Amino acid sequence: MGVKDICKAQNSKMETILPDGGVFKGGFCKKELKKLTSIYIRKFIIETRRAEVTHWMLIPPSILFFLWNPSYIGWIMVGYALLINIPFIIIQRYNRLRLKPLLVKQMKKEQRRGISIETYGT
Image 1 (cartoon, one colour):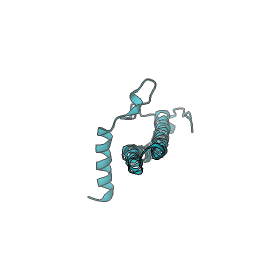
Image 2 (cartoon, rainbow, N blue to C red):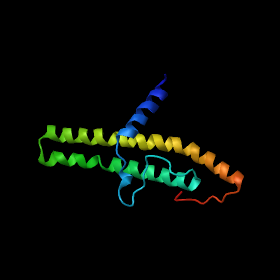
Image 3 (cartoon, rainbow, N blue to C red):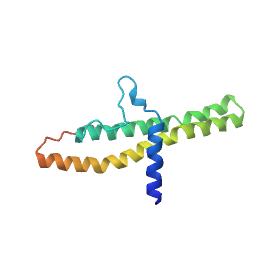
Image 4 (cartoon, one colour):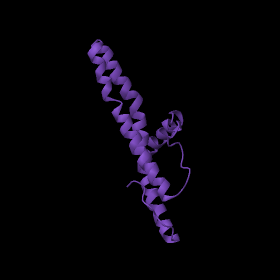
């Protein structure tokens, strides 16, 4: 069992434990692929980028806790922000790396079948 297999197993475990913010009204659920079309896969990739950026943006405000708390509390809050957000960032990147080859494969399949390929936000 190599490092790649261990990362894959741990990432799959994280995906089942961590909640999906896309379940809220108007959100995009990222727990599973609902369709196997190039348009849907592109949208999924865009949503993984959005989710990753959102989690990166949630980390820097933790520094504000140094303004009104003792420094050890500030460090606890920075650690908390990292501990909570890094797993989501890892999952989004991992999923995007898995989806890109699938998108290429699906686009080729659709081209062979003569299906019109529309671009979605790329």
